[in-house]
View 1 (cartoon, rainbow, N blue to C red):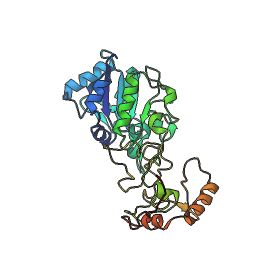
View 2: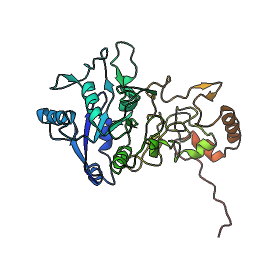
View 3: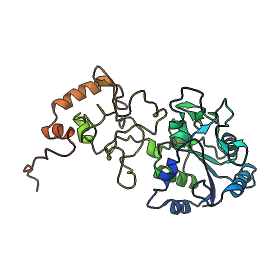
Length: 336
């Protein structure tokens, strides 16, 4: 495969997606880039070049003297105040980062938004009640097409901005996307309606959840540390969130739910402002507002009532405990 040049920029964010990327394993980050024949031109946290050396790399890409195959942006684009972008100036250039991103995106064969901030605005765009910082995504503002770049934008190779959403994004999602690009195996049909790679966005966090037995019987947790399903009371959106977190584990063994925390749907636009505390489930007449994807309300109500009536004592009592208090019965199955 021909070598691809990758340039990584950071704007309005916490840098958490880079920290997550460094946890890549089997293979590790630099090994996977080498496998994919990707050459890291510059990364603000990983590269030795700084000051004028780093700026020269950016200028060479912007002026077309250096081929730019993949541009990755981490963090939202800061367009404030009043659309000038001066809330985030790229040091030493006298230009807003917003202007650099626009110019470099026009030169790149592929553009990746790494993390939900870069994809849709994310945490940086939340809670603005005064003068706005103007945080937005690369090609989406929330769920609406059109961020810094218009909805019609296509990078040099023909794809729109690829949104590797997540807060932070899983290192495997980033590296598998880069590998697919290097192999020319990522097409527009491989992206969902929000431009997320379908290899992880066609799954739900609910898939592979270790609390599925509690979900099936609607045996619900009532407080933090309870073992039960966290959908009914604890704000969990795993049945609606698009990601494979419980089948592609983090650091080889973890996920939010395995750690005892509800899924807050961080791969979705506007997750940062759910309109209620993250660990509470809003309800109407005792019925959660956010029902599982693809399930009509009447079905959920009927199935929930039936499931609760059939809940075994073991599942019911363990659901509101922080450890197993009733163990599975030992029965003679007759199996040979």
